[in-house]
Image (tube, rainbow, N blue to C red; front, side):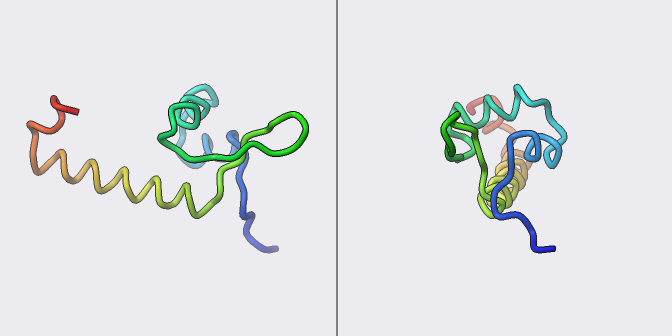
Length: 74
């Protein structure tokens, strides 16, 4: 079976091991880009966008570990 292009917020929460409300907050804040589809406006996150988000989170973490001052200034 082919990998899904779009993930539900529940799927994203499972990948990131966070709650549904935390996932929704990431989307609503714009930190995690998503689209609304269908008549009920259900949120979907493209799998590649989630992978980019994770990669950026690793880079941000590594940067803050190199420069502890940036943690307090973020």
